[in-house]
Amino acid sequence: MPIYEDEAIVLRQYPIAESDSIVVCVAPELGKIRAVAQGIKKAKSRFAGCLEPLNHIKIAFFNREGRELGKIRHVELIHSYSGKIPTLEHIFAFTFFAELTHALAQENQSNPALFRLLLASLKAGENKVPILPLVRYFEVWCLKISGFYPNYACCSNCGKSVKDEGFFARIEDGTACCIHCGPSIGIFVGAAAAAALQKIIKYSPENFAAVPLESEAGRQLERLTHELLDRNLDSPLKSYRILKEAIKKQIED
Image 1: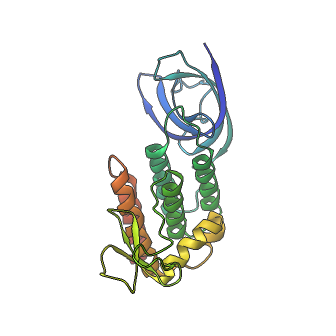
Image 2 (image 1 turned 120 degrees about the vertical axis):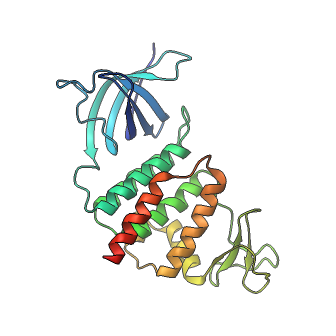
């Protein structure tokens, strides 16, 4: 029975027996991992505290051919991103990151880019960067890594670059239309939002989140990313609704 080892980030955990749980992780080389942590709920469990969601760990597990679930053999905690989160909004954002990663990661398929994105975004959030720009950054890169982000560089009608003036994004066919060609069909992405998209590609999550993002530009990016996510995911992301409500409440207070 082969033993697999990799670093990983815990995405979720749920019980299957009185003292056992299934743990779902994402790893750079092994992709999404589903494995049983036996005895994790016992007071003297060797896994205690290591397999909580948002923990960065080193994991070793074995799995028989044809089995969906592995069995965890050893875990070493590298860092916990759920222990000292700055605000409640950061907690909800991290939970959203984990849910979106869970939806996009594939079992037994290496995806180091998605793993690095999640890890870098958790580190940025722990360093108290503003949440909304960080969320937009994470969404755009998740779409790009998964191949769901169309090429919006040029107008599909006239071929003119739309990076500076903005564009209308047509979700149905993945094309862009400049503001001069019309008609105004699709999601409008103004100049500020288009500039933010270019910065997302060039910057680290921490550096991008440190740059002020205009409210309207943020709303345009939100509509664009979530239209693309809704089109490509099997089910809606429940954690995002909770995150939006928490941020709205914070603004109102």
